[in-house]
Image 1 (cartoon, rainbow, N blue to C red):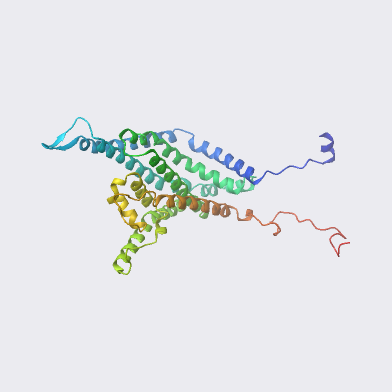
Image 2: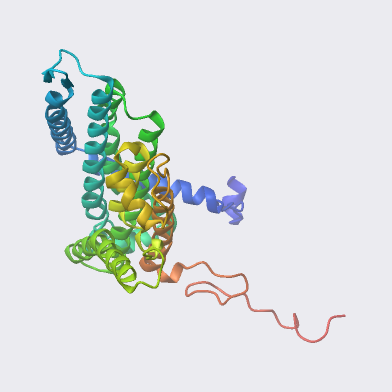
Length: 352
């Protein structure tokens, strides 16, 4: 080692591979961001307050159906029973499942873009983005780490509802696979909607403007696409040329409201008049009360959210540092790279 220092001949340093560089960069950014976000009392106070509010909503849904569950029609009329029938107990479980799913999806639509819309723009405002770009941290690892760290708080709130969601198994009416489907949809929607805020944060320089534009995009996906699809469906019905009213189903693939409606049809087929009736119109199917559609729409919506998240994440990596784009071998070197010139007599003239 002393001889190497004296002569200046250092051993070659092996550069890490793409996968190793990505995982190390994402882990470093995630560790730093999560420590900053979870430090202090605010995070735990918000989680506690959210669980308390969700518990009140569950209790209200239970209380509204409690009296109905203990009433039963007999020959003497409507008589109050000391116990609830199995069918009415299942209705309570389905009501709790629906209430938690609607609240969780509403929370996802509000918090996912809000938490990620300042991930990049705040670094620009603090003038630290250039420092991050000049570090050995890879662009993709930086963006993925910030996205996961920003959504980690939302993921925590979603997972915190599992004990309340488990109450549906006490009353029945909901299968375990239905609960798994609901959480798969919630995590996919959180990833897709969160990537919208992240992309706006990299596209715009101000956090407030990025947040406002992200909310507008989410509102257009939820309400705008639904209104447009309903208008096209009504127009095709009024036209009279089609046997069944038709509208493009792909228009609603990024609509979290329609995905929740299909989840209700999948988990609670008894409500086919409300949920399954609408989903059969969206998917252009015939309504069969005996065999209502299951998994007709939400898997496509979840896949669309995942593809949207991946696409916007890759686009964000190019927005923050265009000079570090992936180059094809043989392309011109970027600024700062040295190009080796051939020595005199080398590489000139024919070989041999």
